Length: 349
Image (cartoon, rainbow, N blue to C red; front, top):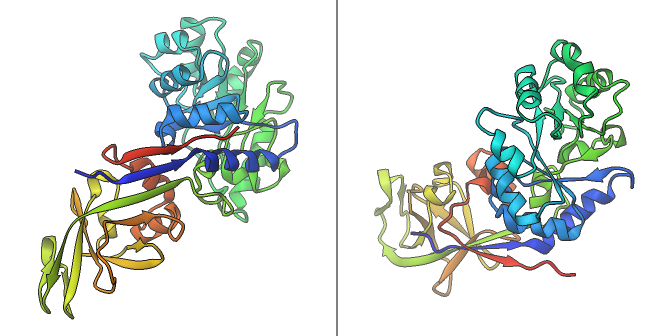
């Protein structure tokens, strides 16, 4: 139902990439993570904008995502797959010139047998216990892998958004130990790791959420702005209720606006009775439950009838909204539904 207006500022996206790039030494490459459809912003448009800005290496989660980005950026940039060489992905990896970050001996064997001579990277598990080879597994295949010249050896930090967390230094030391003597380029840091110190930068950093205006990049330019249309307003008497479950009741005569958006459009149900929308500089509380296609907002205090209200804007970024829902900015961004009309601010030369 939603005809919300989702504005995506590609110039802000590029500015964020450039600021993050400037935080590392000139010898350190700054890649870009564009998985999950460019964090909900549109992978093709995002990748093209970043390519124009100077990004030459992109990371995605799966081969299908890699194919989408390849079609957008052409044959030259590197496109790395976090998921590695999964069963059934061989043809797409080959045809779309994708580089899997191999996560296990099984993936390494699959890649070497199916695509001998094709590029690959290695992902190591330095303490996150999620993807990558653990120390013993890596020790068993290290020589075999290195003699075939991986394009990258990487790992991922579990607690980079908490600078004082002991896991950061532990993973750094583990990564150094596991990559001692490795001549291939090394990568440990996503957005959070960039802010820890230059020790974490190695040869390549790969910002994701920071490009799109999310924490822990506190100085990031906001990339997304979402306005939601008002379908109808109604006046309520004292004691009348709003929405499923009658969870909000008018304590004074009230005017309620019904807006076209709901959890099918990426607004978590947890925002029920616990979020704010904006009419210019004026906050307006969301009242009642978030339903699939609709939300209701108290606009009693407004002096004019609103045609739309903002839910992502200069007063409220993705992390602010996420806090109201008890989640994180990643989830807000990647959940923004396809029913919003997207409009892009073009990249300036």
